[in-house]
View 1 (tube, rainbow, N blue to C red):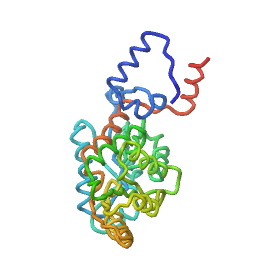
View 2 (spheres, rainbow, N blue to C red):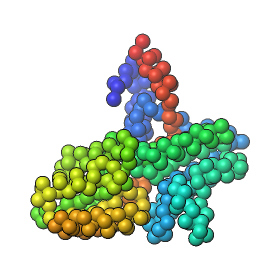
View 3 (cartoon, helix red, strand yellow):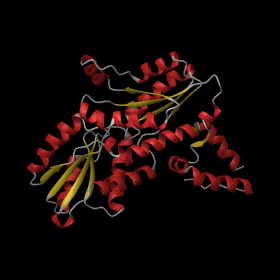
Length: 317
């Protein structure tokens, strides 16, 4: 991170206040966002809304425990605002519609908010990483920007290094291991083919660096792979493995890929396998991280690259 230079007493005072009151600003990057109170800037003619965006799931049990639970948590926290939600998976939306469950896409939800007279929108996704789903969501935001005075988009769960450290702490506390019995925990994420898959390797490295050698991370469609994790477990002479989804919901991937395919594959290599199938969205501390990202978006504006470059140039004249 580039060192910042403060030459005036007032600038030091502002810095100390921000560090005390707005810790998430540093988590997401003090050069990336600046304080800007969206709700405080509203006029009498303005109306604000929160749009929650999830990939979605057809499994009612995990949807209730994760997506619905977080939706209610946000509604309870912001009773003065319109709060709505949407899913991004067209396949899931189609299957739900066939069952009589109507949920909008992000574009449909934004159009409805515009028709209701909403002028400012804060969007918070339940994505885990800055992957393809976030890229698609950002394109939707760019498409709809001309129709609103302002749209702000919150960050996914694993956005900053601080986010990753907190997730490591939460998950290791929630899933203790018996080291004497050579028990290991394997967190299984979805993964992606893009560069953002590196966050899974970062998380795996952090676990080891923070003193948790019996915890590992692998992905279904990215890197590290199942085989990578298996080699690590076998090199430590592991005997038992607890499989845990690293996903917001415990849907198809958790109930089919992890609970069946991955379990069978590890057992075929001589390991005793237990399942701890729950979505990350069920964990209150994980929900709190998403809430903090949402609150951050309400009180901070993301600076575009040209604004950041101009600020950097002025500081270093």
